[in-house]
Length: 236
Image 1 (cartoon, rainbow, N blue to C red):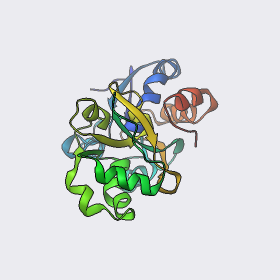
Image 2 (image 1 turned 30 degrees about the horizontal axis):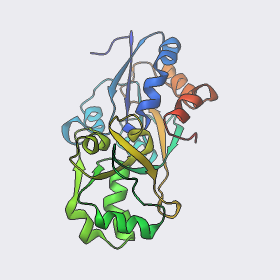
Image 3 (image 1 turned 45 degrees about the vertical axis):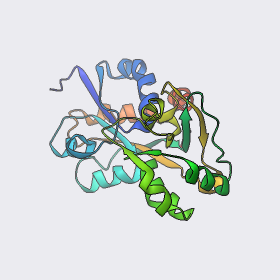
């Protein structure tokens, strides 16, 4: 149960590391304990969208821009006070100790994916791009998708790579960087890269929208820039 002594945040995985680094500043700003209610867009009943639809009390939501606009359409997030807070790129990684994957060009990436025994991807923006666009553009969907595994339940793809459950995987750079046991976090080649903008908005269930808007202004300000860049994101 949320109280006036808590400030509740739901964020997709890409912004999680930056958010966690900024908690001390957020607590000084809000004069409340920051509760991180979610660190993944999620799937099923525990997805951010379903939790919002159930009326869970949340102050701000930070997700991919198009997802946030859908939340506004659904009445889950207020239209006022939106701010882009970061831009994110996608990368592949392998288990620590493995050779660096050759993905420096479209042809190299195609060869690497065809040769990989198994590939992990997420339920969020990077995974949707991989399964719904990238492998189609490379002309290898039929060969690659059957050996690819969706890593769900809010778990990071890097964790499955580190355990050796998949040979190679992709996710937002900021979601791979904090994961131990993986290596060679290599961005997609420029011609295949997908940059996503992550945007913060005030949840419709927020008990203090004016405070939430001040927090969002802070997240989009130069004061938050170092934590955002250090997490592997870019400023918008």
